[in-house]
Image 1 (tube, rainbow, N blue to C red):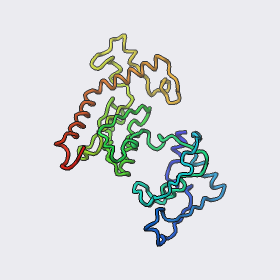
Image 2: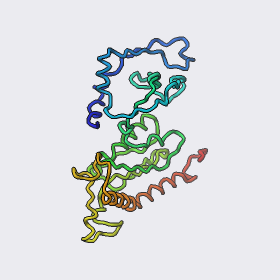
Image 3: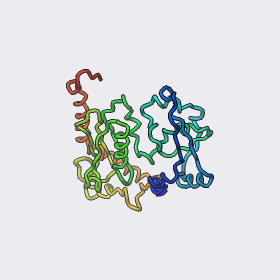
Length: 280
């Protein structure tokens, strides 16, 4: 499924299957209407639609009752600055497609767009100070954060710049701190990839393993025979306990970085650090 997503998500594929769309000239009431400009869609032939479904559909999805059925979400779009009604290739420009009259709604895992939940926390007004990010994927431990940064930049939301060094990309550390001193509104970000670093030869922070304990530090996270591969839905008790010990150790071993992040946040929250007239 992941390979199919990569193949069919490129711009070339999308340009080949998008609906043909034209916009009419703005009417005299365009300035007062609560709707976007009138538009029409030419969906194409049945063969074209079948081809589009083959290229853009997902082999696995969940069908559930369409909780949007009957809602007139296309109203008052013109007054909502957060909708991209100007982009003819954006779903927001054809709002009636957001409220299909189908009785069922097919949902796809949002991780195919951004593989973390940061955007849901960053709505304007929430004033998030600190984000704890735990990435337990086997590959690309920083990709979800970089996707979140791109999304936030497009939405005008403050977010720290996520640019790990080439060395960190090759061998992530137990904890990474990202912040933007030039933008106090951006939250401080603590990122915890799932890695087996100093846990190999330490049973606790600062406590080296004895020769008899070294086997307990051999946690295979990425090998072909790893018990933690994506498609393994159940773990043996021994593997589960070892993974729990590893994650517990990584957090405790990152105490200094965590305290540094908390101090940074508290310093920003101090009254003398805020511009005059700003309330908390």
